[in-house]
Image 1 (tube, one colour):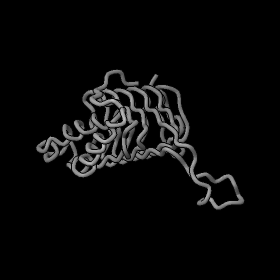
Image 2 (cartoon, rainbow, N blue to C red):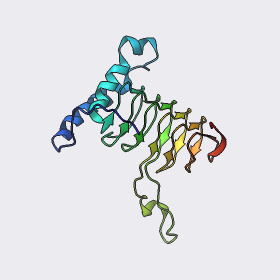
Image 3 (cartoon, helix red, strand yellow):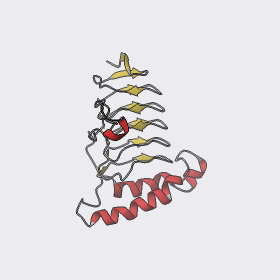
Length: 190
């Protein structure tokens, strides 16, 4: 996983109040700033503003991280993201995802942290609640295409390439190229 992080605040109880201020600024302003790659995004320094806020919110935040327009990460208090990595436009992540170094993420990716319980046939699915929250881990040097869906608790190993619109519902070996619904091995990079 990522090696070098900026961590201006610890996780002491009082720090959560300070992080709440950064969250309000992120969701009230920075999430709405234009894409970092657009003329207006460059003019308003959108990438720098979102980065400055997120490095104060996330548990760990590496150097040269890009959080794009519309990215929703809940409270973000447990997120770890490594150097030179990013979250794509309009991505949705739970607040506990772990992302390594040099990870490229396309727009509109969606990470699930838990699922609905459904095994007890004597109760409606609605009344059974949810499964335990699981952490999704993304290794180093990973390319995640547009609109990829991650089921809870996936581990994406180093060097993996995930095709656009893939539903990642199982884990694969390092340097895999995967795609489809459900995800299947297309080839390897080795």
